[in-house]
Length: 398
Image (cartoon, one colour):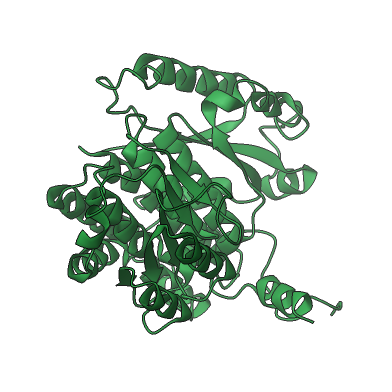
């Protein structure tokens, strides 16, 4: 075995039969990533209850802030993206995700910093919390109980929302996101009510049931999506700002769970250049030479091809005149599907459902989250164990 590949296992070709064998899936997933992914609805409920017990009213005493900074890295950092998109373009103050240590230089007493860390010990969240305290900014901390982050919050006499560490950070998005949203609600920045949270949790539960391991591939949308992506270079584009957050989340989980390289982003930005990927050596140039009668295994060896995943919102923005008009988003999404079809590039579409922005976001994230785990399992990879992460930490800390 080559140096640096200790613990690396799996096979390059996806094994479709494995996905319809619940026993084999359980054996391949000893850490329970599928189970953790299925807990998303429960995470919403638990975190909402924990946030209700925290003394968030302290935040409202000083009125509306000048700006809100959400400090965290990885999945914790995505909570800021979720807040920004749920708050929408009419949010009365800037909402700024911040993914490096400390806080922006302009942050001061007029601002609020929300520091988020699943472990409660990430340098980015700890540095931001300490900096917010020094500068007199209002602080909210979200993370594991009895952690360093809780200690910083207590020293600053700031609200702390404990999120028990029940799953890996990347499977804890909803546990971390709900407290951030409820802190922002206390500040008057978002309209997220209890019905929205309940409907979002119910949507996540329903999708977890549709994507359960015992549901066969032809009726399981996550297994179908995983098999469609197998052996490809995925391109995931969102048709709206909300769908783009879901697209970037799918990129996170495909990379971390299935170890696939992914291109993600907003469909509007893609139309200014990246849509050209459909013409390239992994797109139209490869597809134009595909032999429809060739053996699929031989075709796989012939070259890697693009697979487009389009997350379509179909939005609730008709009354938000500062948003891009819904009709423009829809026409653009139709156009890219037509472009892909003309070039022979396969395209999967996930369409948002639900009555609130939060529920629609959940409907765009749930199936892709499961698909990333199934894709890992089909390749014989343990989605929980990522040797390169451990190895990088060891090398960086030498």
